[in-house]
Amino acid sequence: MFSLPFVKPQLQFVKRTRRRWADFDIVKFEDELAATELMTTDSTDVNFLFQLYDTTLRSLLDKHAPERTVNRRLRSQTPWYDTECLLMKRKVRRLETVYYRRRLPICYRQSRNEVVHYNCLLRTKQQSFWGSRVREADGNPRKLWKTLSNLLTPAAQPVHHFTAQDFSVKFKNKVDSIRASTAGAPTPTPPTA
Image 1 (cartoon, rainbow, N blue to C red):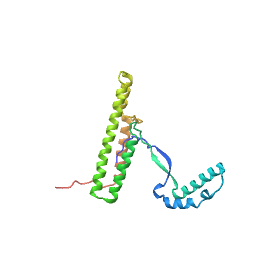
Image 2 (cartoon, one colour):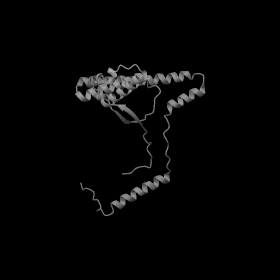
Image 3 (spheres, rainbow, N blue to C red):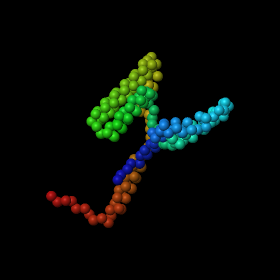
Image 4 (cartoon, rainbow, N blue to C red):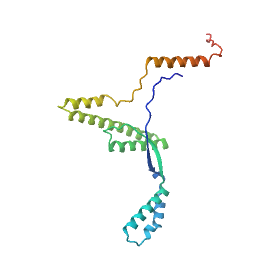
């Protein structure tokens, strides 16, 4: 297989700490909370009560919804992506999950309809954002040009230059390695018709 000497931009990840809320059982949590010293203490010392509150809730949360560290891929931010877009995306993902679990035609239609609405929302948000940016720059050619440049030119990725000589060397080495690996093989014969 042939490969060009391009270096693919490295993905960037960030570590985040999350709790496992999916397995959280509120009834067990409330039962254990009711049996703690926090619920039975008669102390009026604010510092003691705050410390007790903090340690009790942390220990119960660590037991019922333990923390875990996850790696999240950093993605380029879009300035027009707001809370409404996020909530719509969550709704789409939830409906897709329902469809994948149940495999019913009605679930499929609901999820597809929400995907269409979500894509329309994104397109509308993007158009209104860039439209307002262009209108804000009205009368200021420098600002207008910068806005249009940002709109028409995607964020520059690091460019990895290679020369024709680099390409030639890579190609020659690949051909030589294929020839060396097939040197002892019999000559292929074309099929006869």
